[in-house]
Image (cartoon, rainbow, N blue to C red; front, side, top):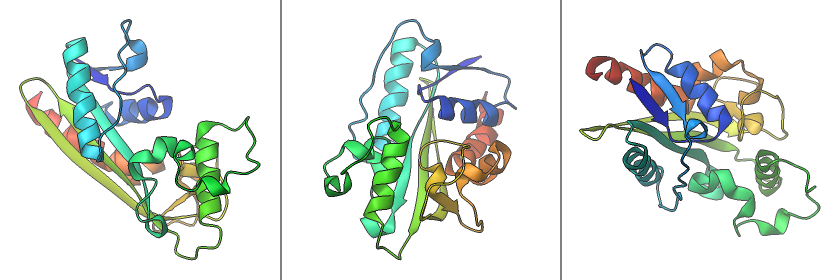
Length: 206
């Protein structure tokens, strides 16, 4: 059986393939597909974005799809970046802190730097990673969710992972997500929790 992961993010693909390895399936990503379709994530919640991606890609490629939408919620910013996590640097909120940011930084580095600057004088660093995962197989759909509580560090550390991992310290740890091994991260991460739930269900229905 083939299942399509509705993402081109190499970090997500790597994590999801590792988490799905116990299932007897061939895991494809959007980068493996010849015909290209881009589905805009323009909804207002992680769930709505995940459902839109799962159903749109499934109908286009005629394959079962696993889609997810995830992000970082920071209490001091009233839940932002949230659904804007991947493009936080580009949104209007917080533009005042964007002076003198080098153009050669990656998108992740720019997002992280913007967030650190917005929290510069903030003692409340509480935050959480959230993900909503949708499996769509034409006949039925499965929804799972995962949350990883933690706090925002004062500086970027570590080179594992991706996204906000270098500035996110998981609850119970004294190092960032980017300082954990992939195996350590998968045990506690929002995505790891959501995929583990999905795998248990898929073992029964596939």
